[in-house]
Image (tube, rainbow, N blue to C red; front, side, top):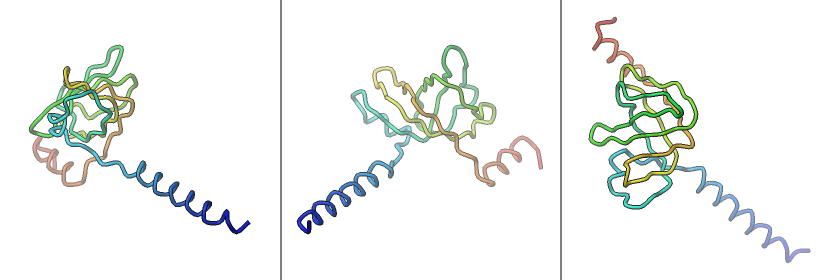
Length: 127
């Protein structure tokens, strides 16, 4: 019975390491996509480009980081801040560099900080 203790301990250690590796996802910036030359799974954080959201058969919008922009196609629906351009999203999906497009399987919106809301309100004249 004692010979199984190290095997169980190692199995648990590898399981924990595997879980931590999968759960600690790092985000790419939109500009990082310029370096990708082959179709790849990506997780990207960016800002919704003002006025870019279109709803048809799919939700289509663009995200940017101020230097680069990419098109996102999502087969679901999520509420985006399409008016101010301050909406930050995390997009997970498959990136096709030949089309500069991400076919998203998950889109997560991020809440803007108090400072971003205040700056936006100030820019449109609201106190």
